[in-house]
Every structure is written in C-alpha cells, then in structure tokens.
Length: 361
Image (cartoon, rainbow, N blue to C red; front, side, top):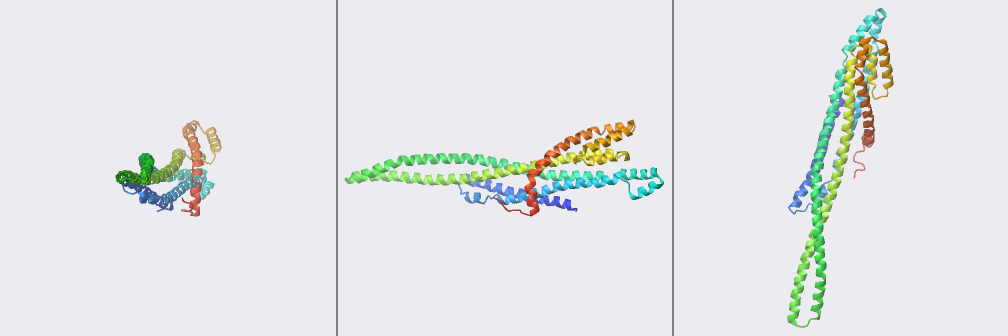
C-alpha cells in the first residue's frame, strides 16, 4: 500500500472515530431527554456531555484530510515531469536522430502514444472522489446530529419556559401567604381566650403547611429550571459546534469538487492532445493550468494554428470548449483555494506542530 493510500485509510478510521464521538455525545443528550421526561435527575448526563474530546478528534481528522487535499495538489504538480519527458526526446531518440530524424520522431510518437498519463490521472481523480465521499458522509452525519440536537433544544426551551412560569406562579402564591401568616401570628399573640387561640392556631398551622408545601415546590421547580438551563447551554454549544464542523466539511468538499473538475478537464484535454506529437506543447500548457500560464497556452496554440493546415485548425477548434471551461474552473479553484487556506491555516499549523489538544475549551 502506497503512503498516500495509507494516509487515506488512516483518515477513514479518524472519520469513523469522530463520528463515534459525535454519536456518543448526542446519545448522552438524548438519554438526558428521556430521563427528564421520566422525572429522573439528568445532572450527571449533562455534566458528562463534554465537547472537548469530540473537538480533539474532529480537529485531528480535518488536519489529516486537509493534508490529503494538499497532497493531491502536490501529486498533480508532479505530472509536469511526465509532460516534460514527453515534450523532449530521450537520449536514445537523440542518438537515432543523428542518423534519421524521421525515425527518431516516429519513436517519440510511439512512446507518447503508449504513455500511461491517462491511468495516472484516472487514479488521481479516483483518490479525489474517495476523499470527497468521506467528507460527504461526514457532512451527512453532522446534519443528522444537528437536526436531532435542534429538536431536543426546541423541546427543552419549551420545558424551561413552562418551569419558569410555574416558578413565578409559586413565588406569587408565597408572597400572598406572607401577610396572612403575619396577620394570624399577630392575632394569636394578642388573643387570650383558649378557644379563640385554638382556632387561630389551627388556621395558622394550615397556612404554614400550605406555605411549606409551596416552598418545597419552589425548590423543585428551581432545581428543574437550573438543570434545564444547563441542558440548554450544552445543547446550544453542541449545535454551534455541529454547525461549525458542517461549514468546515462544506469548504473541504467545495475545494475537492473544484479540483476534481479541473482534473477532469485536464484529463479530457490531455487525452485528445496526446494523439499527435505536434500538439505536445499544447498538452504541456494544459498541464500548467492553475499556474497562470494562460497567455503561454494562447501563444502556443496560435503558433500551431498558424503553422498547420486546415485539418490541424479543425483539431485546435475542438480545444476551444476545453480551454474556456478550464478557465472557468480555474477561477472557481482560486476562490476555493482562498477559502481553504483561510479555513485550514490553523489546522495545518496544529498538524505540523503536533499541537493537538492544546487550547481546547
């Protein structure tokens, strides 16, 4: 297994582990929701629903996938050596050319015709699609967790609103009982007749019992409101984290899709251009896509068009659509690269310095 394929496999495992951590955290929140519906204390579940471990695994996963994407760019750039070798003659072809230029050119054409660049490009596109599939699956998992957490959060917000309303009602009833208690206590202190005192004591005991019951309910509702508040904060934080992770995945997917489009154009144009040795300069210029060589490509194509016959002009016209589309893809790639660079500057720095888990909150 090549180093790049091993890195892809490593990223697969990290994606699976990150998804497992997300599922575990969402599961704790879901368990808390079930327990809360049954009236069970959910404090422990909420306190254990920590995001730090999830963030650590997500950062590591994204750092390695970012490195994979950068690695794809490096592999693409490495194709320039293959194109250079096709543009120039080998040592043996130069020796043969001393005696027969025609024979040397035929040898060069045959070598170009059997070149394996197409297979290498297909392999590169396949790797791009593999990484894109991993990212897409991860994005779907994130969206699923986000919907689940949003539903839980909406229910919890409604529960807390109801708890706060009940708490306010209990407080209001307690405030109404205070004057009654004070009044009965004053009457009792001033009353000297045993019968009247017995009646007042009974009334005061009933009011005090009601007061104590309401005070107990106040404590219960206050504890419920505080627990729900912690639950809401955990839900909000987890939801925000899921949204940020989803945004990260979309940036990565956007860059990969743009890169893959570019490589498909490169493959298609190259497979047509390599049919004749006369078009090797054009093939070389197509390889330089994304390296600001559009002007050089135009000059090369103009030179070929001016120097060839009508058949060659028709062949060049067939390249127009490829070049126009390639420029459009190039513009998309520049934008995607800028977003990618902004998003993953920190991730790549963490990866290079092996600074995972530092500064996590």
